[in-house]
Image 1 (cartoon, rainbow, N blue to C red):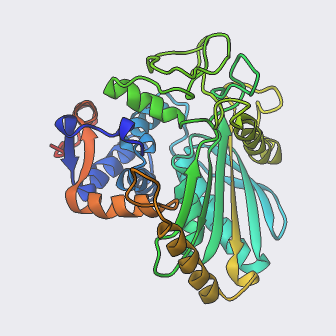
Image 2: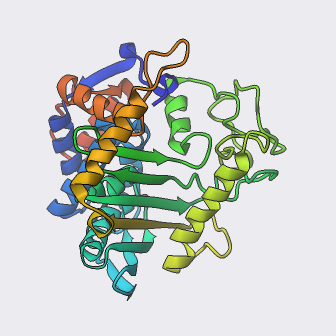
Length: 364
């Protein structure tokens, strides 16, 4: 997480992760979820908060999830089902359930199938927001596999040379296990920044930096300073990763299209053929390492590779070099020890929702 989006200590209230987890589970139960789904939904959210992925933790996403359940847009008791299947593939209908609960369950099924066939990819339709997709990819890594997860939907990204948003932020996550080193976990939007970072910036009163958003005519804003409230039409006008064609924005844009293809048409999800702003779908994949090589040797090689990366000589002005997943693992250790920093406004939301749902409030 860039320092730009971190909650200043003066505005932060540190909350113990176990207390926060209990509160989130109870909120999910109150809006109609089963005990099992309440625990899983809270785990996906707390994964993000513990690892410093604040964009997809309780601060940004929980209130949206509660609103979806209360307004009847999200099914609290989904009965997801397989609509097409082979030994190494499947398509799933999520029955209108929340994606951050459906996707990890489907990844478990992909892992089970990959243990028999060597790999398995599953496309998911009719399912809401998937949360931090790194969680789903990491499930495979913990099972001795390489995991991948992605989610598509909405109109937020302006295509290279375009003047209106046509794709979602369309994040992709990959995870691979190691032995002594923290697992490699790459989880990133195909836009210059994740869409929820705009929400964090708005809460913190921070402006947008150069290369993050487009100007009203679609040209990349390479000056910065725009308010986080800035939009083109009725949607956020986010630039693809790399911002301009010269810097390589066509790569982020095209990878965003890849995510749409893998999530939408493969699952036969509605709205992808016409790029409707309400479309949403997901895709998960698991590769069994044992189908390629000895798992212990793979993990030993991963240790050597990752150690080599973090021991790279740092550039001037920097103390060290990271690999994807290392700073998150270190943040999790710190936040488990010292608590999760939540903005005062988030604490007040929790106070209000706990009162509304008759839940004991003990976060502050």
